[in-house]
Image (cartoon, rainbow, N blue to C red):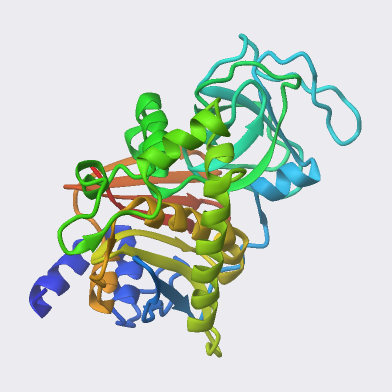
Length: 382
Protein backbone atom coordinates (compact mmCIF):
# COMPACT_ATOMS: atom_id res chain seq x y z
CA UNK A 1 0.00 0.00 0.00
CA UNK A 2 1.35 3.45 -0.94
CA UNK A 3 2.09 5.86 1.96
CA UNK A 4 -0.66 8.34 0.99
CA UNK A 5 -3.26 5.59 0.59
CA UNK A 6 -2.21 4.19 3.95
CA UNK A 7 -2.59 7.60 5.63
CA UNK A 8 -6.01 8.25 4.08
CA UNK A 9 -7.34 4.94 5.31
CA UNK A 10 -6.01 5.58 8.80
CA UNK A 11 -7.62 9.02 8.98
CA UNK A 12 -10.97 7.52 7.98
CA UNK A 13 -10.89 4.84 10.62
CA UNK A 14 -12.88 6.44 13.45
CA UNK A 15 -12.58 4.82 16.85
CA UNK A 16 -10.23 2.08 15.61
CA UNK A 17 -7.52 4.68 14.81
CA UNK A 18 -5.33 3.76 17.76
CA UNK A 19 -5.18 0.13 16.68
CA UNK A 20 -4.26 1.02 13.12
CA UNK A 21 -1.42 3.37 14.04
CA UNK A 22 -0.07 0.82 16.45
CA UNK A 23 -0.26 -2.01 13.93
CA UNK A 24 1.75 0.08 11.51
CA UNK A 25 4.42 0.91 14.07
CA UNK A 26 3.43 4.63 14.09
CA UNK A 27 3.18 6.34 17.48
CA UNK A 28 1.45 9.71 17.77
CA UNK A 29 -0.60 11.62 20.33
CA UNK A 30 -3.72 11.12 18.19
CA UNK A 31 -3.24 7.37 18.27
CA UNK A 32 -3.65 7.28 22.04
CA UNK A 33 -7.11 8.70 22.59
CA UNK A 34 -9.04 6.96 25.39
CA UNK A 35 -8.28 3.41 24.27
CA UNK A 36 -5.83 0.89 25.61
CA UNK A 37 -3.64 0.60 22.53
CA UNK A 38 -0.95 3.10 23.44
CA UNK A 39 2.14 2.39 21.34
CA UNK A 40 1.02 -0.96 19.97
CA UNK A 41 3.28 -2.72 17.52
CA UNK A 42 3.35 -6.07 15.72
CA UNK A 43 6.30 -8.46 16.05
CA UNK A 44 7.63 -11.04 13.61
CA UNK A 45 5.57 -14.20 13.60
CA UNK A 46 6.08 -17.43 15.45
CA UNK A 47 5.41 -20.09 12.82
CA UNK A 48 4.55 -23.77 12.90
CA UNK A 49 3.34 -25.80 9.92
CA UNK A 50 0.84 -23.52 8.11
CA UNK A 51 0.14 -21.34 11.16
CA UNK A 52 1.76 -17.94 11.79
CA UNK A 53 1.14 -16.04 15.03
CA UNK A 54 2.17 -12.37 15.00
CA UNK A 55 2.33 -11.02 18.58
CA UNK A 56 0.79 -7.59 19.20
CA UNK A 57 2.57 -5.82 22.07
CA UNK A 58 2.26 -2.54 23.99
CA UNK A 59 4.19 -0.61 26.61
CA UNK A 60 1.15 0.82 28.38
CA UNK A 61 -2.10 -1.04 28.88
CA UNK A 62 -5.34 -0.51 30.77
CA UNK A 63 -6.25 -1.78 34.21
CA UNK A 64 -8.66 -4.66 33.56
CA UNK A 65 -8.70 -6.11 37.08
CA UNK A 66 -12.37 -5.09 37.49
CA UNK A 67 -13.45 -7.72 34.94
CA UNK A 68 -13.86 -11.47 35.29
CA UNK A 69 -13.99 -14.02 32.46
CA UNK A 70 -16.79 -16.54 31.93
CA UNK A 71 -14.53 -19.50 32.78
CA UNK A 72 -13.43 -17.83 36.02
CA UNK A 73 -16.96 -16.85 37.06
CA UNK A 74 -18.41 -20.30 36.36
CA UNK A 75 -15.56 -22.04 38.20
CA UNK A 76 -16.00 -19.85 41.29
CA UNK A 77 -19.79 -20.01 41.28
CA UNK A 78 -20.10 -16.26 40.75
CA UNK A 79 -21.95 -16.95 37.50
CA UNK A 80 -24.65 -19.57 36.92
CA UNK A 81 -25.76 -20.55 33.42
CA UNK A 82 -28.81 -22.78 33.04
CA UNK A 83 -31.52 -23.82 30.64
CA UNK A 84 -34.49 -21.46 30.73
CA UNK A 85 -37.25 -22.86 32.90
CA UNK A 86 -34.91 -25.38 34.54
CA UNK A 87 -36.10 -27.31 37.60
CA UNK A 88 -33.25 -26.18 39.82
CA UNK A 89 -33.22 -22.59 41.08
CA UNK A 90 -29.85 -20.86 41.53
CA UNK A 91 -29.33 -18.90 44.73
CA UNK A 92 -27.55 -15.70 45.64
CA UNK A 93 -24.47 -15.68 47.87
CA UNK A 94 -26.68 -15.12 50.93
CA UNK A 95 -28.92 -18.08 50.02
CA UNK A 96 -31.87 -16.24 48.50
CA UNK A 97 -33.49 -18.09 45.56
CA UNK A 98 -33.08 -16.31 42.21
CA UNK A 99 -35.71 -16.73 39.55
CA UNK A 100 -34.41 -17.29 36.02
CA UNK A 101 -36.14 -16.32 32.77
CA UNK A 102 -38.94 -18.79 32.11
CA UNK A 103 -40.63 -20.19 29.02
CA UNK A 104 -39.04 -23.64 28.73
CA UNK A 105 -35.65 -24.74 27.40
CA UNK A 106 -34.69 -23.25 24.04
CA UNK A 107 -31.83 -24.11 21.70
CA UNK A 108 -30.68 -20.52 21.22
CA UNK A 109 -31.30 -19.03 24.65
CA UNK A 110 -30.04 -19.80 28.14
CA UNK A 111 -30.43 -18.03 31.48
CA UNK A 112 -27.51 -16.25 33.19
CA UNK A 113 -27.24 -15.16 36.81
CA UNK A 114 -24.16 -13.13 37.77
CA UNK A 115 -23.74 -12.73 41.52
CA UNK A 116 -20.04 -11.78 41.68
CA UNK A 117 -18.44 -8.46 42.60
CA UNK A 118 -16.75 -7.82 39.22
CA UNK A 119 -18.17 -7.14 35.77
CA UNK A 120 -18.44 -10.30 33.67
CA UNK A 121 -16.97 -10.26 30.15
CA UNK A 122 -18.51 -12.68 27.64
CA UNK A 123 -16.91 -13.29 24.24
CA UNK A 124 -18.63 -14.84 21.25
CA UNK A 125 -17.23 -18.32 20.67
CA UNK A 126 -16.82 -19.38 24.31
CA UNK A 127 -18.28 -22.83 25.02
CA UNK A 128 -20.36 -23.89 28.01
CA UNK A 129 -20.97 -27.61 28.59
CA UNK A 130 -23.99 -29.38 30.05
CA UNK A 131 -27.71 -28.80 30.03
CA UNK A 132 -29.59 -30.41 27.17
CA UNK A 133 -26.86 -29.47 24.63
CA UNK A 134 -23.45 -27.80 24.75
CA UNK A 135 -23.71 -24.17 23.64
CA UNK A 136 -21.46 -21.37 22.42
CA UNK A 137 -21.87 -17.70 23.37
CA UNK A 138 -23.44 -15.88 20.41
CA UNK A 139 -22.38 -12.31 21.11
CA UNK A 140 -19.90 -10.28 23.13
CA UNK A 141 -21.37 -8.50 26.12
CA UNK A 142 -20.58 -7.22 29.60
CA UNK A 143 -22.74 -8.08 32.60
CA UNK A 144 -22.45 -5.79 35.61
CA UNK A 145 -22.02 -7.17 39.15
CA UNK A 146 -25.21 -8.23 40.90
CA UNK A 147 -27.37 -7.73 37.82
CA UNK A 148 -30.82 -9.27 37.51
CA UNK A 149 -31.04 -12.73 35.90
CA UNK A 150 -31.01 -12.27 32.15
CA UNK A 151 -31.52 -14.24 28.92
CA UNK A 152 -28.28 -15.25 27.17
CA UNK A 153 -28.16 -15.70 23.40
CA UNK A 154 -26.27 -18.83 22.35
CA UNK A 155 -25.84 -21.33 19.51
CA UNK A 156 -25.81 -25.09 19.86
CA UNK A 157 -22.53 -26.90 19.24
CA UNK A 158 -23.90 -30.37 19.98
CA UNK A 159 -26.40 -31.22 17.28
CA UNK A 160 -27.47 -34.71 18.33
CA UNK A 161 -28.47 -34.33 21.99
CA UNK A 162 -31.47 -32.76 23.71
CA UNK A 163 -31.42 -34.31 27.15
CA UNK A 164 -29.42 -34.17 30.33
CA UNK A 165 -29.54 -34.85 34.05
CA UNK A 166 -28.88 -31.22 35.01
CA UNK A 167 -30.16 -27.90 33.76
CA UNK A 168 -26.85 -26.21 34.57
CA UNK A 169 -23.68 -25.58 32.56
CA UNK A 170 -19.99 -25.61 33.41
CA UNK A 171 -17.02 -23.91 31.80
CA UNK A 172 -15.65 -25.93 28.88
CA UNK A 173 -12.51 -23.75 28.90
CA UNK A 174 -12.83 -23.81 25.12
CA UNK A 175 -13.05 -21.22 22.38
CA UNK A 176 -14.42 -22.62 19.14
CA UNK A 177 -12.04 -22.27 16.20
CA UNK A 178 -12.36 -19.32 13.78
CA UNK A 179 -14.60 -20.97 11.16
CA UNK A 180 -17.20 -21.78 13.84
CA UNK A 181 -16.67 -18.53 15.74
CA UNK A 182 -17.20 -16.52 12.56
CA UNK A 183 -20.55 -18.19 11.89
CA UNK A 184 -21.69 -17.50 15.46
CA UNK A 185 -20.39 -13.93 15.82
CA UNK A 186 -20.95 -12.57 12.29
CA UNK A 187 -23.43 -14.74 10.39
CA UNK A 188 -25.56 -15.49 13.48
CA UNK A 189 -27.13 -18.58 11.91
CA UNK A 190 -27.52 -21.88 13.75
CA UNK A 191 -27.34 -24.12 10.66
CA UNK A 192 -24.05 -22.48 9.62
CA UNK A 193 -22.62 -23.02 13.11
CA UNK A 194 -23.48 -26.73 12.93
CA UNK A 195 -22.01 -26.99 9.41
CA UNK A 196 -18.76 -25.36 10.55
CA UNK A 197 -18.46 -27.78 13.47
CA UNK A 198 -18.85 -30.75 11.11
CA UNK A 199 -16.57 -29.43 8.35
CA UNK A 200 -13.59 -28.19 10.35
CA UNK A 201 -12.85 -25.19 8.13
CA UNK A 202 -15.29 -23.27 5.94
CA UNK A 203 -12.46 -21.61 4.00
CA UNK A 204 -12.84 -22.13 0.21
CA UNK A 205 -9.48 -23.90 -0.02
CA UNK A 206 -10.69 -26.52 2.44
CA UNK A 207 -14.15 -26.77 0.88
CA UNK A 208 -13.03 -27.05 -2.74
CA UNK A 209 -9.81 -28.98 -2.24
CA UNK A 210 -10.00 -31.53 0.59
CA UNK A 211 -6.99 -33.27 -0.94
CA UNK A 212 -3.64 -31.68 -1.71
CA UNK A 213 -4.04 -28.29 -3.47
CA UNK A 214 -1.60 -27.22 -6.21
CA UNK A 215 1.74 -26.45 -4.59
CA UNK A 216 0.52 -27.50 -1.18
CA UNK A 217 -0.23 -30.44 1.08
CA UNK A 218 -3.58 -31.83 2.22
CA UNK A 219 -4.90 -30.62 5.55
CA UNK A 220 -3.80 -32.47 8.68
CA UNK A 221 -7.42 -32.69 9.82
CA UNK A 222 -9.69 -33.88 7.00
CA UNK A 223 -13.47 -33.87 6.79
CA UNK A 224 -13.38 -37.62 6.50
CA UNK A 225 -11.50 -37.86 9.81
CA UNK A 226 -14.02 -35.55 11.49
CA UNK A 227 -16.90 -37.64 10.12
CA UNK A 228 -15.28 -40.83 11.39
CA UNK A 229 -14.74 -39.30 14.83
CA UNK A 230 -18.43 -38.37 14.99
CA UNK A 231 -19.44 -41.96 14.19
CA UNK A 232 -16.98 -43.59 16.60
CA UNK A 233 -16.41 -41.12 19.46
CA UNK A 234 -18.80 -38.16 19.28
CA UNK A 235 -22.19 -39.33 18.04
CA UNK A 236 -23.96 -36.26 19.43
CA UNK A 237 -21.67 -34.08 17.28
CA UNK A 238 -20.44 -32.35 20.44
CA UNK A 239 -17.75 -29.78 19.65
CA UNK A 240 -15.96 -30.67 22.87
CA UNK A 241 -15.98 -34.40 22.09
CA UNK A 242 -14.85 -33.94 18.47
CA UNK A 243 -12.05 -31.44 19.00
CA UNK A 244 -11.27 -32.06 22.65
CA UNK A 245 -11.93 -35.54 24.01
CA UNK A 246 -11.00 -37.66 20.98
CA UNK A 247 -8.04 -38.72 18.88
CA UNK A 248 -8.48 -35.45 17.00
CA UNK A 249 -8.24 -33.63 20.31
CA UNK A 250 -4.95 -35.32 21.11
CA UNK A 251 -3.51 -34.22 17.76
CA UNK A 252 -4.78 -30.68 18.30
CA UNK A 253 -3.19 -30.58 21.75
CA UNK A 254 0.19 -31.57 20.33
CA UNK A 255 -0.07 -28.99 17.54
CA UNK A 256 -1.23 -26.26 19.94
CA UNK A 257 1.50 -26.99 22.47
CA UNK A 258 4.22 -26.61 19.85
CA UNK A 259 2.65 -23.43 18.46
CA UNK A 260 2.36 -22.02 21.99
CA UNK A 261 5.99 -22.92 22.74
CA UNK A 262 7.16 -21.04 19.66
CA UNK A 263 4.91 -18.08 20.47
CA UNK A 264 6.34 -17.93 24.00
CA UNK A 265 9.87 -18.04 22.61
CA UNK A 266 9.11 -15.22 20.16
CA UNK A 267 7.91 -13.01 23.02
CA UNK A 268 10.38 -14.07 25.70
CA UNK A 269 12.76 -11.14 25.16
CA UNK A 270 10.24 -8.39 25.84
CA UNK A 271 11.24 -5.90 28.54
CA UNK A 272 8.84 -2.99 28.98
CA UNK A 273 6.12 -4.39 26.72
CA UNK A 274 3.31 -6.86 27.22
CA UNK A 275 1.61 -9.13 24.69
CA UNK A 276 -1.95 -7.86 24.29
CA UNK A 277 -3.05 -9.85 21.26
CA UNK A 278 -2.21 -11.78 18.14
CA UNK A 279 -2.66 -11.54 14.38
CA UNK A 280 -3.17 -14.98 12.84
CA UNK A 281 -2.23 -16.18 9.35
CA UNK A 282 -2.77 -19.53 7.64
CA UNK A 283 -0.24 -20.06 4.89
CA UNK A 284 0.00 -16.76 3.04
CA UNK A 285 -3.39 -15.45 4.20
CA UNK A 286 -3.78 -13.18 7.21
CA UNK A 287 -7.18 -14.26 8.50
CA UNK A 288 -7.82 -13.26 12.09
CA UNK A 289 -6.81 -10.97 14.96
CA UNK A 290 -7.72 -10.88 18.66
CA UNK A 291 -6.51 -7.91 20.71
CA UNK A 292 -7.26 -6.93 24.32
CA UNK A 293 -7.05 -3.88 26.54
CA UNK A 294 -4.25 -5.38 28.62
CA UNK A 295 -1.63 -8.07 28.64
CA UNK A 296 -3.22 -9.48 31.77
CA UNK A 297 -6.55 -9.93 29.99
CA UNK A 298 -4.93 -11.53 26.95
CA UNK A 299 -3.09 -14.00 29.18
CA UNK A 300 -6.41 -15.16 30.66
CA UNK A 301 -7.74 -16.03 27.20
CA UNK A 302 -4.46 -16.87 25.47
CA UNK A 303 -4.34 -20.64 25.97
CA UNK A 304 -7.78 -21.40 24.59
CA UNK A 305 -7.37 -18.87 21.79
CA UNK A 306 -4.10 -20.44 20.62
CA UNK A 307 -5.71 -23.86 20.70
CA UNK A 308 -8.62 -22.59 18.57
CA UNK A 309 -6.20 -21.24 15.97
CA UNK A 310 -4.49 -24.65 15.92
CA UNK A 311 -7.76 -26.44 15.09
CA UNK A 312 -8.34 -24.08 12.17
CA UNK A 313 -4.78 -24.51 10.91
CA UNK A 314 -5.09 -28.29 10.97
CA UNK A 315 -8.38 -28.15 9.03
CA UNK A 316 -6.93 -25.96 6.25
CA UNK A 317 -4.62 -27.28 3.52
CA UNK A 318 -0.97 -26.85 4.41
CA UNK A 319 1.10 -24.45 2.33
CA UNK A 320 4.70 -23.30 2.01
CA UNK A 321 3.53 -19.69 1.68
CA UNK A 322 4.13 -17.31 4.55
CA UNK A 323 2.40 -14.03 5.36
CA UNK A 324 4.76 -11.09 5.82
CA UNK A 325 4.96 -8.73 8.78
CA UNK A 326 3.62 -5.88 6.63
CA UNK A 327 0.59 -8.07 5.82
CA UNK A 328 -0.15 -8.43 9.54
CA UNK A 329 0.25 -4.70 10.12
CA UNK A 330 -2.04 -3.86 7.23
CA UNK A 331 -4.64 -6.31 8.54
CA UNK A 332 -5.07 -4.13 11.62
CA UNK A 333 -6.12 -1.12 9.56
CA UNK A 334 -9.64 0.05 10.49
CA UNK A 335 -12.54 -0.81 8.22
CA UNK A 336 -14.66 1.85 6.54
CA UNK A 337 -17.80 -0.14 5.79
CA UNK A 338 -21.26 -0.45 7.29
CA UNK A 339 -21.26 0.12 11.04
CA UNK A 340 -23.70 -1.30 13.58
CA UNK A 341 -23.65 -0.15 17.20
CA UNK A 342 -25.62 -1.56 20.12
CA UNK A 343 -25.42 -0.24 23.65
CA UNK A 344 -26.59 -1.06 27.14
CA UNK A 345 -26.57 2.32 28.90
CA UNK A 346 -23.94 2.63 31.56
CA UNK A 347 -22.53 -0.85 30.86
CA UNK A 348 -21.18 -1.53 27.38
CA UNK A 349 -21.03 -0.60 23.72
CA UNK A 350 -20.91 -3.33 21.05
CA UNK A 351 -19.74 -2.25 17.63
CA UNK A 352 -19.44 -4.18 14.33
CA UNK A 353 -18.10 -2.95 11.00
CA UNK A 354 -18.35 -4.95 7.75
CA UNK A 355 -16.40 -4.09 4.60
CA UNK A 356 -16.29 -6.60 1.76
CA UNK A 357 -15.19 -9.93 3.22
CA UNK A 358 -13.82 -8.29 6.36
CA UNK A 359 -15.54 -7.76 9.71
CA UNK A 360 -14.40 -6.28 12.98
CA UNK A 361 -16.22 -6.47 16.30
CA UNK A 362 -15.40 -4.50 19.42
CA UNK A 363 -16.80 -4.72 22.95
CA UNK A 364 -16.15 -1.72 25.18
CA UNK A 365 -17.04 -0.83 28.74
CA UNK A 366 -18.53 2.66 28.91
CA UNK A 367 -18.06 3.55 32.59
CA UNK A 368 -16.17 5.10 34.25
CA UNK A 369 -14.74 5.82 30.78
CA UNK A 370 -14.86 4.20 27.35
CA UNK A 371 -12.51 1.22 27.31
CA UNK A 372 -12.30 -1.22 24.39
CA UNK A 373 -11.75 -4.51 26.23
CA UNK A 374 -11.57 -6.77 23.18
CA UNK A 375 -11.51 -6.40 19.42
CA UNK A 376 -11.62 -9.18 16.84
CA UNK A 377 -10.98 -8.72 13.14
CA UNK A 378 -11.98 -11.41 10.65
CA UNK A 379 -11.29 -12.19 7.02
CA UNK A 380 -14.49 -14.12 6.53
CA UNK A 381 -14.08 -17.56 5.01
CA UNK A 382 -17.07 -17.51 2.63
